Image (cartoon, rainbow, N blue to C red; front, side):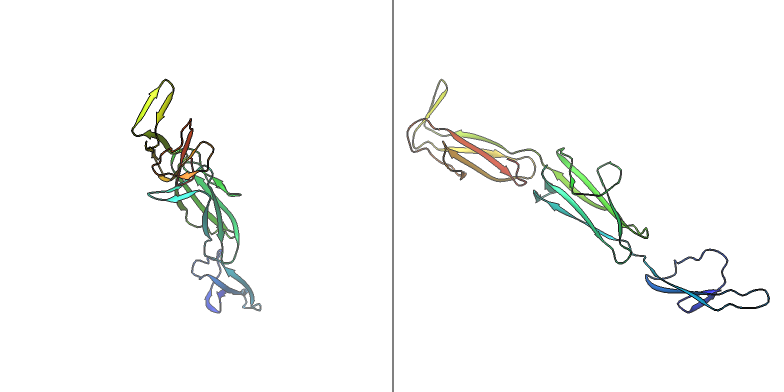
Length: 220
């Protein structure tokens, strides 16, 4: 016969299920009786029943921007970790898109293909409690913004040279298809970069204008 925690008086006939016990410490007491009612002294076995699955979590490292999606770049990585109440972590598993689950070892890179990707992960403890799978959608933005230049009036084009004067306004047109624009910068000749606003060129002579835009996940 056996009981748990001093309660009950079950007759042993097959492997004993622990389904009715709660998470925590328990003691199994048991003894045998022969056919002429000789009864051995009670024996006991104490154990901790861990019924609680681990809790996995993730961290996004590097470029990221929360908009309609969580946008990331090809430089972004995803770290996974997990905590467990007692038995300890056996492993963390993950899959990206339609891949099979694999064992996590180091920070993950997202496929460098523009568009939405799904990272799923789960964790198992040392007594085989497994968490439910967690889904983290990420949008890979690996496309730089587009930036162009417009010149106002007056202007005159001769062969390969555009002529303007000190009052001609120079403007930049810019767009981004995914995470959106963060900033646009320009410089004249070898000067320092400036944040874009409509500008003019006050000094006479040949000038070279450099410009570019950066999106919200730092593609430029």
